[in-house]
Length: 438
Image (cartoon, rainbow, N blue to C red; front, side):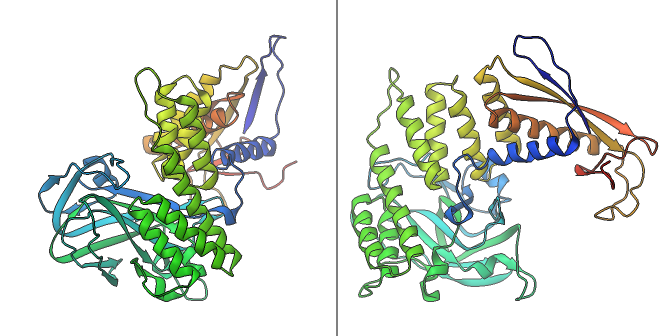
């Protein structure tokens, strides 16, 4: 790989060569910064979004490979705090089959229990569901019928971390995705599922896995915490905060107390967010942007995406809001082709005069690699290979442009390399340096 760098600062043009490893290190660091702007260490990650399924929304169903049969219904309901979900559609069915893609972060696959959050009509008669993952039944999901007015509420089910792994017991490997099947003997209304990987249940006894319900007579920190989650699912924020505060005070495990306090922050966010009323004359850019930063710094990526989207709607010319909206999309497991262009747009919105234009020459190998690191053969020079390479490098350039706040703009040139050329190798999108750098 060779590069030509144009440092355009109004003083003329400087051309210089940049070493291969320097550019590679810079690219890796810049792309990583696109997913780590808030400086969280690995242990800070919790309740990591693993996607969602908005039943009745064709695009969402297609993204999750959703299969079910049943009529589409709609209910014009709100949650207890008067907030409205983005979609009121549901499917009345007795069986659902769909794919859940397991979250990843800087350290690799997210390891922990899988939390399923399900939106339900509180007035509907509870129906017992059976949950099956990759052909293995994991239990029954029963829920009580909440008291009070008719409303939407969220209920939870927790799959153990072992349900997401494969391979031998002494060397388990987290699956990239799972196939989930939900069945029932009677019809039920399916509105929406949200999925999260969390380490909370690794800090609590195993009997707290499964369906999450109020635990009467159990005064432990873990039970009090789970009772708070029940209230949080019902959007009863003040009651949830009171239970979380009590649970954190009881917890002898500092990590569990830390996880609980994070739920307090999420409730505080909603108490603040529900007070913001946008109008055509005032769409509260500063407020939504600040709330988005608060959510992102605590790992509430679904909520961060909502707030940054509102901020962009209020001021589409903000590079920071656009970039952070794209970053939240990435953490919410949205496809790279949806958020990488927005990162590139953010780079343009910064409109920097000191932008560094870098031309990257990417060699496409046309001969077999002897003893390559993965024992692959030469990349076929066909349209599919070239399209994939072009798309991947375009996304990388867009991420770098946004992450650098518009300071580094990469232009990519693809060149076929023969056996007589220097051995810089790109092989089906993978880069290797030469055997001897000198």
